[in-house]
Length: 137
Image (cartoon, rainbow, N blue to C red; front, side, top):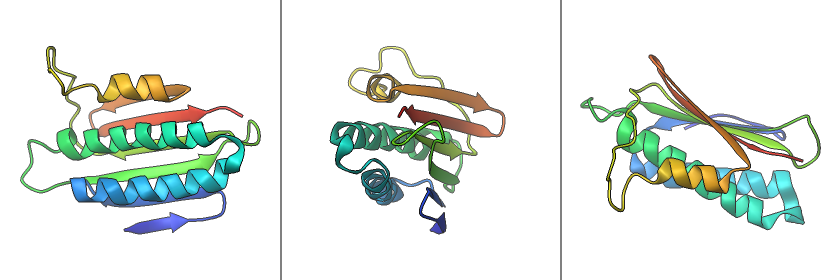
């Protein structure tokens, strides 16, 4: 599961399954606690939940048209813009599925990410999707 982990960053690649979402969520929470320390516990909680939503989307939607799950990658690093600034990306190599209209209680992951992250981008493409979250210094 672990591709690389260092003092300044985290890089994990796993099968895109619901079971791996929890593992990556715990890994990013631990990394955020180390990166942000006690300065911003709300940011740790908010970013952990936002990352979890992005991972859930990758696990549930990116490979829905395949018999076997693909992979999802979680990368986190300190941003050189200042102490406490971080950048976290969730990437899959599956197919983008636009949010459905009228999904009821489902389909709120991207809206939740938007509320929880200070800044985020979603880049769907022919080779997968990357969701990037930024927390400023």
